[in-house]
Length: 203
Image 1 (cartoon, rainbow, N blue to C red):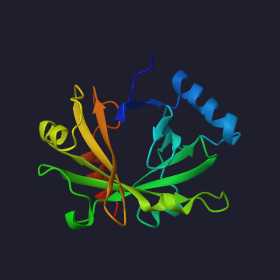
Image 2 (image 1 turned 45 degrees about the vertical axis):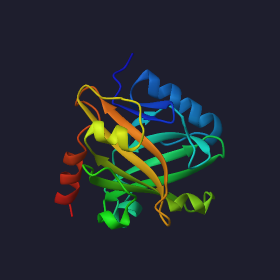
Image 3 (image 1 turned 120 degrees about the vertical axis):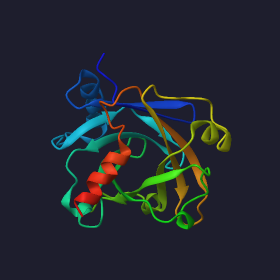
Image 4 (image 1 turned 180 degrees about the vertical axis):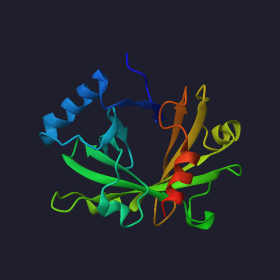
């Protein structure tokens, strides 16, 4: 079994991210290509098993970009992923950038430190549902006890670190789902603050 880089849990399901060179990743890529045809996987560093996204109405496979596409970087992306919506046959790009002020975000636990936001883009020439662009995420650190109480979450902690994400409606700020990210070591994508600092240094 290859090392798991990250585990995201939401709605009773979990998604594990694997290095693109692993056997687990190869099986997931094959699953994607059964629906979307051959893909150019160069530039991706990890991929996760499909998980149901109630806010999007589809099971989604996520591939994490190691190199941010220029068309996303030019509009402010400091991280990016390709989202394969397995039930609809559409794919989208998700970009990550700096978190705005608290009054532009949904209500979070008092100890929350917003690190980044993410939002989806339809890909030119590939079709898709433009409503996905109104579904945003905020990613944050928080006191685990407080966060679990605030969102009525089951206790789930990583051995190395535990971080959180909230999917919300960008217009109404309604919380659509809560995600828990757990890391049992620092070999994966666990250093969100470090990634933010690196992104700031490249501006």
